[in-house]
Length: 156
Image (cartoon, rainbow, N blue to C red; front, side):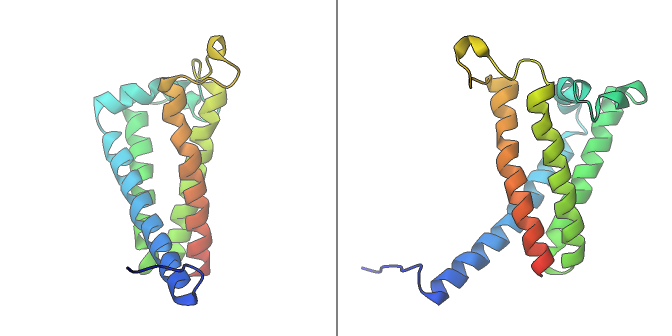
């Protein structure tokens, strides 16, 4: 039977390497998927309530259509995906991508406070709705992953 002792330097380095590579595979995939979906009418409609209630983004609907706003957000997300994916060939570009990812998730986590229906006080102080509450909850983890990515890209 094989045992693994992650306290050995070799095992620890292997785990660090896997974790760093996983972040720069997973985050670009998330941004690629999210970004591509923004070009559909389905997704443009799905994010409208979140964006419209945001003090940071709500004003853009005064200038652009629902689909145009979604396309703009999607384009931004696709650019972030590419920049993050370049981590192993152009770490400086990945720094820019990670900062974009952090900015993205700072804005989306702010939706907790600006979007009606996130909290459902009838079910308890910390109760959140499935949509949009639990949907937004993942962005806290993605924000943490983006901070990790920034640290790693800077070190590279």
